[in-house]
Amino acid sequence: MKNVSFGIHFVLKINKIISGLAPIYVRITVDSKRCEISTKRKIRVDMWNLGKGMAKPLSIENKELNTYLEQLRTMMVQYYQELVINKVEITPETIKNKFFGVNDSEMTLCKLVEYHNTVCKETLRWGTLKNYFTTQKYIELFLKEKYKVSDIYLTSLNYKFIADLEIFLRKHKLIANQRQMENNTVMKHIERLKKMIQMAIRYEWLEKDPFVAFQQKFHHVERGYLTEDELKRIEEKTFTILRLQYVKDLFIFSCYTGLAYIDVMHLTPEHIQIGIDKELWLITNREKTDTSVKIPILPVAMEIINKYKNDIKAKVQNRLFPNIANQKLNSYLKEIADICGITKNITFHLARHTFATTVTLTNGVPIESVSKMLGHTKISTTQIYAKVIEKKVGEDMSKLKEKLSIK
Image (cartoon, rainbow, N blue to C red; front, side, top):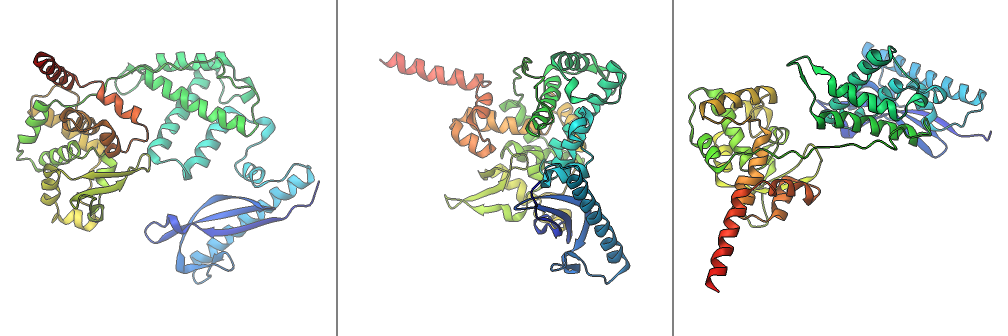
């Protein structure tokens, strides 16, 4: 085996500073290749010795931190020495794998899922990662109930395993309301497993893809939205209960901007900027896809912004609106729907659909413009909304009839 250069260094992630604390990562370098692993520790930047790659020993806490980092360094060196002794090809990834307890020759399904969810903590957004944790829970439950085991080797996976998992998920009843999963929910869990299996194949932990003959079947779901009359009913309703009035204002704001809950909550005064037309725009990035979103502010939305510009909580949080949990928000929206005589299942995300349909597309805004404002990366995503606008189709056909009658 050829000699390789090997190094262990501790570095700060300056771009991930939260509340003045920077996370510490261990950087593994083998020849010109490198990878980084979180140490699960944080420190103030001014308390870090950049040259030595360690904390300044000015306090007991910093001395304990340095001891922990040296233990990690010793551990990494031991992994390196084991690989040398066993004549295994040494790369940053092989050392990283040993750190996470991954044994290439004995890779199991649960180890793969755990590895994926641990590694992807740094790259996946929490909303997406949370879904992977849910899938992990169902995989573990399936292994326990179907196979009476806690884990299974990847080499044991085949088409029947995937098919059995699908059947298990379809029959499994959700404890909260004793109903079974819908088709698309089942397919989403299968899709996540498939992505993790693809990772195993790329890492050469698995040769044969058990998904080769498996076909996922997603059902088309019509996007719900408020009609013009329903939107008007909520818009014109004034609530004496402050929490309902606030939730109503947020919902209407989303109906006229198309922003999702998390994007509304993250808005700051700095996101209000002068647009290309010299008017006020909201210019931000979508949390879900990190795509740029530029939305001209309609009068209704501007009125709501002005209503809360002096709110104490919003000012303290440096936000346009004071924070409220999504779960509470959706719970209050159900109260608002009942009071307004709307039988639809209203959630905050319904406002985004309403913006796409009732507010923009129905009023003749080109689908390309709507797609840009929604932050969609593909116009085919926006076209889903266009398919449900019967009123617009009727109006267009009426105009066509008039043109044909003139000839």
